[in-house]
Length: 242
Image (cartoon, rainbow, N blue to C red; front, top):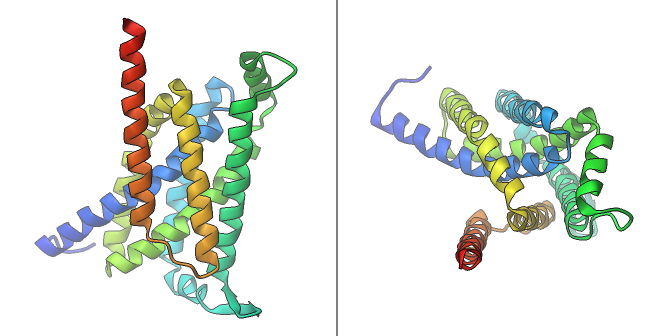
């Protein structure tokens, strides 16, 4: 445990807020994935996915000495060196790009053979929950690596990091259902969320090649786009009432 002082409380609150913000993209991705499962399986799969993320983060946190070795170069191509962390970010980024592109195509184009609603029901019957959890697990690992490295940079006490992750995950578990419902009810938000994931995928690929992109710019772009879309939603709702 840690002693409750103004410094540790500030560190805990700051880190909890940061971990919650970093977990939003994880929730969005899980929400979009589980939407393709039958309704009765969605909440369970979503909660398992978020719980797995917590387990992975705490496990990585207690393996911090190993995490630090991931920054050591493994090989060099031309003038570009690649570490274990770079390869994980590259793999995760490419996966996000491919998955988001596929999901956007599915949402926009649907199935040309049958009606969109029937197509989505058809897909939900075929989707396997275990396969979906495997995809969630891949992204949990990528997002958790980023989360743990951020936590280590912001706090020196492992107990503070663990508590911050526990609190942020509880917030995520409580809010995941509402976020999923909101995304599901608004198709344009779903496309916007997938576009966010494309943006994050590009950032991960860029970072794997050593190009640092401040997350502040990414989150500002996401927040601004979301604000514009919310204004559009209110405008459409107002016009539909007339």
